[in-house]
Image (tube, rainbow, N blue to C red):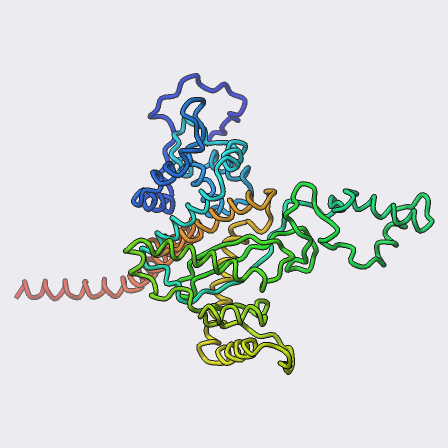
Length: 459
């Protein structure tokens, strides 16, 4: 075998025949996804919703269907930034085919992708999420009887070292320098600033500090114990199917009890809109959102009373607060708290609380861990929510593909195919081993039968 030459410095041919271009068989997952979207008219729906954002004349821009498909790729491929999505689309032949680009065409770069995101409004992104949810409802994947709610924090695209005072606009270091000079230190060192900051109370209060480029971000303690500027994402999940009924983005310093009703209201609106189609309504529960399941962070007298007045049964874990004192408090508070306590102690309540942890944590894991949106690379609430809506819509599309292909992402499908090939290989190897072991016995039996036949012929 001869050694080949390095071809990086060689001059490329001026013309290439179309038949000589590399061909790809396409990825089976994206082929199924494209077939599903084409079957239900995704391209025409998106073009109809986005036509008002495009001019009649001028240089052609990114088709809206390509823009939304590229954001779907961000979820399925686990890409955290628009720059990474654009690079992956240019690098992969199967993604070029999924987006509808030939080998002689170049997919959009990240600047075109972000410019298109800024021009298409938030409501259009909500409509695309709603279109996917209606598709799930038609396939019977939305029951909407029992809804589980939980929240998680997403690290903002902002650093703590660049926060400024809300009142004066001073940076953190400038503020500490002023404190040091007020205490009598004319030229404070970094050690002096650290000493002053160490003993100061409420040093990172959201009332006093903000970020100049992302004012919607809030100083928050993350799941791992570190402190970052962050946003709060809240999911409303169908407890029967695991479908994501609504996603909301709240300030990270707002408590769970403060944001629950807003998220439930958005989920109710989405379910009602999906139920407007006869095929979807026939598959859904006759009384949607009649039960709510949540963890102890959502437990409060006002929340339980408000949900009870709306005729919603609550299964919300109760924190250990000791013996409750009801003197001077309205009677509906006591009734709502005790009714919720009775339900969560029953068998169905315990089962729902266990299932809540399974389904909602699964949506967090798919969207923010393998989906790579735990760390944000966008500023501003609307920009983040646009990406988040399409990201979670891809999660819902994964549920539909899972019912068709047995896997909800390209990686899962590849692993399933690998497992199938491995089992087939093991079965073939087992059969071959059996044949090899039985071959001497079969040969002996064949020799015996042949000798008997010769004797019989001689007679």
